[in-house]
Length: 144
Image 1: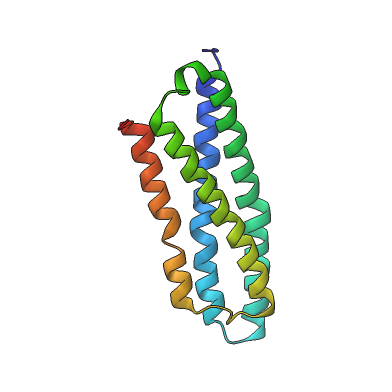
Image 2: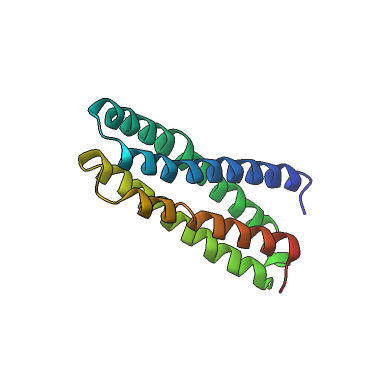
């Protein structure tokens, strides 16, 4: 493989960590937003959620995909028959769908902070944890 492969991998991991940090935090903001009762809090959460989604979460997701696909292209001959990678890619697609749902939910909360209960958001917040655990196990252990 190319000499700079490890630099691409490092950039992939850094962007993935930033993406997960934001994807863990945004639904937590949804919990607090759903529990807020005053206009000042509502307005503050709208701004925080927008900045987190647009300024950190989405750019981090894009960078994660770019660096991941770059590694895939560079190492295709090694990766093409790795079952664990196919499952990992499926999980990343599911995480990207979750990301999109966060964007939709964020916009719905602007108009109706009580759209869903804080209990729903607490459970919703656990989905990326499960994906992260599965991805890390797949990448490190390579069970198949």
